[in-house]
Image (cartoon, rainbow, N blue to C red; front, side, top):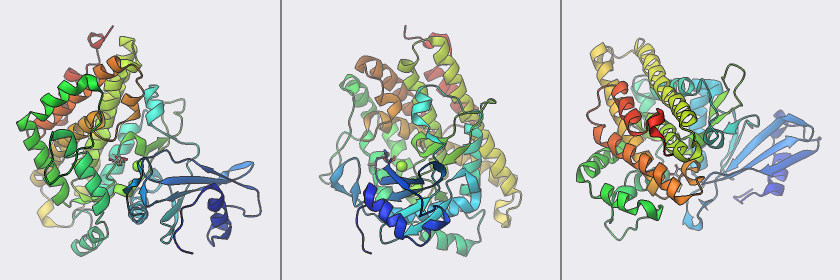
Length: 423
Ligand code: SR1
Ligand code: MG
C-alpha cells in the first residue's frame, strides 16, 4: 500500500494486517493504540494488548513536514530510513542501550520497535531534579562503542566507506547546520536567508553582544566546517536529554537507560555527540537557577549534573582506549596518536557543547528545562547563565587540554556552591 499518514485507528489497522506483528502482539486480543509523539518531527503510536502492558510495540512514522511547524516546513519522510539504519547499527554495537528494532516499512516511512513504556524521556524528571546515578557512565559507554565501532578505527576501510555512504542525511544535517551552527550567531544571513531565532526579549542585549563577538563567530565557523566535512564515525546526531529515556531510579539510584531517536544520524566528528550530551546537562544546571530557589538544593543537583558529565567523559576515554588496544591498523596503534585524537575529540565536544547551549537559549528550538520557567525575569537569569557558559565553551574549545579544565570553567560560570544563590 502506498504512503499515507497514519492516525490512531489506521495505526491499529496497519498492525492487524502486518505480517510481522504477531511476533510481538496477539492480534486476537483487544488492542489499544495511542498517539504519544511529543517530539518536533514525527508521529509516534504505541500499540498494546489491553490488560497486558508488556505485549506492546511502538510505531514511529516520518511525515512529509516538521510536526511542530506544520506543512509550511516540508521534510522528507526518508529520515525514517536513516533512523532504521542507525538503530540497526547501534543495536548491533550496544544491544539494549537502544530500543530493539522490529521492522522498517519503506512505503510508510515507518519504524516498528520496542515500546519502552516503563521508561520516561529525561527532560521532565531532570527538571524535577531526579538523579540517575549511572547516566554519565552509560552515555559514555554508548558513545565509545557506537562511535569507535563505526569509525576507521573499528571497521575495515572499505566497509566503513560503504557504511558512511548509507548515511548521507543531507536534509537533517542542514537543520543542524542552520539551527545549531549558523543562525544563533549571525545577526544577518547571506543569500536572502532568514534567521529563525526566538528569544526572551529580556536577553536581547546579551544576544547582540554575543553576535558582535568576532572571535566567537570565527570559532563557530570552524566548528560548522568540521561538522560538515569530518566524517569520523556514525553519530547519533541529536543526543540531547530528550533523546534519552530511563526507568525510575532503583533503591541504589541506578536506572535502565536507553538512547532513542537517531534520525539525525550521519558521518561526522565524534565530539559532536559528546558535546550535545554534556551541554544538555549544563542547560539543566542553568535552568535550576529558577527551578530550585533553595541554594543548597540547587547546588546539590548541579554537583550531580557535573559529576555525570565527568563520568561520561571518563567512561568514554577508558572505553576508547580499551578499543584502541585492539586496533588493527598500525597507523592508529601508538599512544601518542590516541592521546592526540582524544584531545581533538574533547576540544570538538567543548565547542559543540557551547553551540548547543547558545542555540537552545536563543535559536529556533528551545528546551523544556528553560521554557518551563514561567517568570520571564527568572528565565532571563537562567538564560544568561546558559549564554555565558556557551560563549566561554566555544572560545576555549580549540585551547582546552583536558576535561578538568573544561569543568573548572563550568563550575566557575554556573557554580554549585550557595554563592550561586539568586535569593
Ligand atoms: C526543526 S527541528 C528542531 C530540533 O529538533 C530536533 O530534536 C533537533 O535538535 C533539531 O535541531
Ligand atoms: Mg528527536
